[in-house]
Image (cartoon, rainbow, N blue to C red; front, side, top):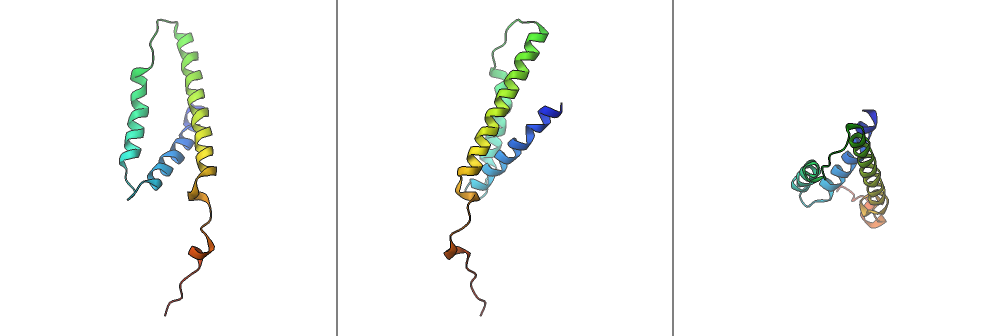
Amino acid sequence: MFWIRLGDIPLAILFTWLYNRTEGKSLLPVLLMHASMNATNDYLPRTKLTVYALLVMLYLLCFTCYALLGIVVLAVIFTDRMWRPKPTSEREAVPIQ
C-alpha cells in the first residue's frame, strides 16, 4: 500500500502545476484530468487470466504509469518557466512615496 500512496506525491505536484498554469486559476482542467484518470480503468483490456497473473499485470501497469508520470513531472518542473527566477527588471521593488 505504501508504494501506491507514494505515487500520490507526483500526482499532487502535477495537479498543482496544472491549476497554477491556467488562466484565472481554473479547476476545470484539473477536474477533467482527474476524471480521465479515473475513467481509464473502464477501458483497460479485460482478459480471463488467473488472479495472480492479473495482480502482477496490474502492479506492473501501475508501476509503469507512475514511473512515466514521475518522468513527466520532473521534465515539467525543470523545463517550465514558472520555476525560473524573474528577470531583474521585474524583481526590483517600487519605492513607496
